Amino acid sequence: MLDGAEGRHATTVRRLGPGEHVDLTDGAGTMASCVITAARPGVLDLTVLERVYQPAPVPRMTEVGVDVVVPWTAERCVVRWRGDKAAKGAARWRSTAVAAAKQSRRSWLPEITEPASTAEVASRIAAIVADGTGLAVLLDPDARQALPAVAGARGLTEIVLLVGPEGGIAPEETAVLAAAGGVGVRLGPTVLRASSAGAIAAALVMTAAGRWD
Image (cartoon, rainbow, N blue to C red; front, side, top):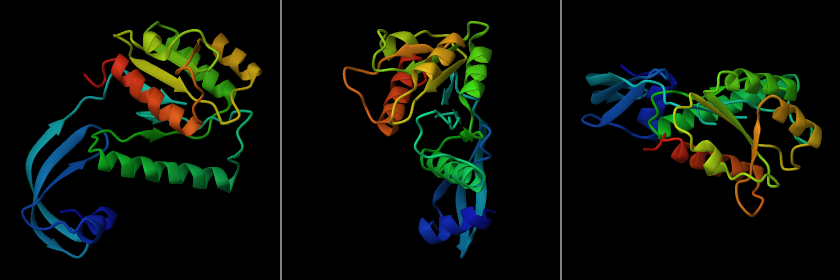
């Protein structure tokens, strides 16, 4: 049986009814393919046809968005998450992540962490690159290396993609992140908006790393 918020969405928004198929996930890899046997306001009765477990994707992608999103409080960020605003902002991002995961039929829900300082992001980078199986790339329009060439190595277990704010990443921040193991890369000959750069860079990385094979 599917009830609660998901049941209400299924019956009142999507207007699903008997005989239609739905996929349910626990957000941690388990996916159940079901058929609706009965529907009433806010509630669906389901029969499970198949239950499968899908391992977590490799390499794991962190955008500082795909498997993990780390809100980075960079120096030049216009919006500042503090106090209640931080809690509301994180809750809104998590709600968006769940909605996007449902629409794309993902079996793993993206994790949205608490906001991180530059020092905390640098510590995360250092931890994943320490054993040589992780990669952290920092989008920088002045970098010499191109993103696909850097991210194309197979066998990586985690890739961190760092996207700065509209005002760019401060030189001091670049130095800290590079010292932790971050590699500066350019996305192309032009400078994209931060909102576009993250999505495009993530698509290029997942293609180069074999996530979309």
